[in-house]
Amino acid sequence: MQKSDSIFSLAGDRSKISAWDAGWNVTNAIQGMFVLCLPFAIKHGGYMGLILIVGTAVICNYTGLILVDCLYETEPNGRRVRIRSSYSDVAAAVWGENISNIVINTCMVLECTMICVLYIVVVGDLTTSIDGTTPIPHMAVCIIATLILLPCIFLRDLKEVSRFSMGCSVAQLLVLGMIMLYCFTKISTWPWNKIRFNYSAQEFPVSVGVIVFSYTSQLFLPSLEGDMERRGDFKKMLNWTHLSAAAAKAIFALVCFLTWVDNTEEEVTNNLPRGLRTIVNFSYLTFFMVTKMVNCNYLIRSKMLIVRLGFILGTLLLAVCVPHFDLLMGLTGSLTGSALSFIFPCIFHISIKRLKLRYHELFFDVAIIILGVLFSVTGFYNSISLLAQQYSDDPDSDHSFAFATTFKTSLEAELSDSRVL
Image 1 (tube, helix red, strand yellow):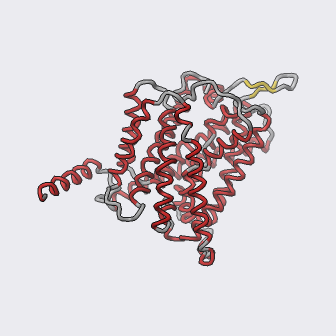
Image 2 (cartoon, one colour):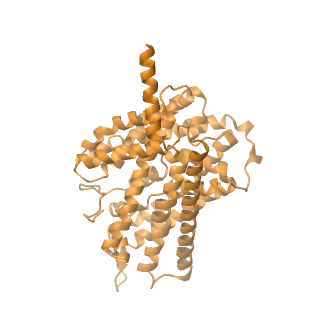
Image 3 (cartoon, one colour):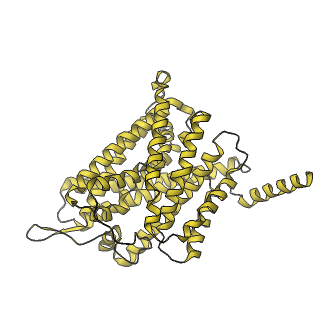
């Protein structure tokens, strides 16, 4: 971002990148680990889930294009001039600098925080489900994972972060490939009649938030377009990345759901047989989780170690208190995902380009705003309702809000064992 008042920054000079490099960055953003939740969305939404996976890709592709279009103004001679450089710059042109800083930075902090929380939660989920008999409780795994990440607070150079990127990408491709291969070995048992148009009125809005969150990339698109050697290739690059993402996600979600049907887990890797599950989960734990957490923590520009330390410990506390991966992801997608990817870009487009918009463009913008508000309200309400239901129905489970009680119980058990010895 260009503005120095943003709390997020990719500091340092960046060389120009090709359209292929830009496409790789976008693909990494929208084809990340959260793809593992999409079969669970099909479980609750059936064909509606598949339609939304494709439809959300189309909408996010459109909002990405109009957001970048808002970076430019056309001179009287028809020449387009790039007068803005970031998401925050576009927001400032509409709301003013003060309001835009508050709104955009708040959304960015929430999204980054929740991403870090989700990775801690999923590390706990994958570790405790590797063989089904892991003696370490979910809370302890989350604490261990956070302790491993503490050295991240000393990072100063973005190059140190980027060294893990290739391993992360390779791990992602290997994991998805192994899951797909296993699913195709079960093709003869796929019950196609299990996929229907009916959906769960309570769970499906949460799945919508999960789907929206899996396509969130608008925050860095303006900067990415500015770094391209040939900016004229941006539209083609964005079209192909979102088209391929829609196809890959829809096929992956459908194939995995048909393999496990009603037994589909929140993270589909947990449905795999024990041996394969061990390989897949360790692949993620070794490369993907740590890499993404390092990236999220590095993006906090503050040089105060106490701020970085507080951020990591705060995400740990949230992960331990609310260890529900799908509900947290749906909640985040409903709040920041819908706002940053659906609502805000269309508001900016209408405000900045209002005198040049065609009727169908104005219709699309207004329709997407309404859809984004609907997704946000219903997803937020149902995510909160389901979270409350989790704790009210099972107050003594590992998913209880009683973090202190859980910790105390574990400590008393250990002391008791010590006395016995």
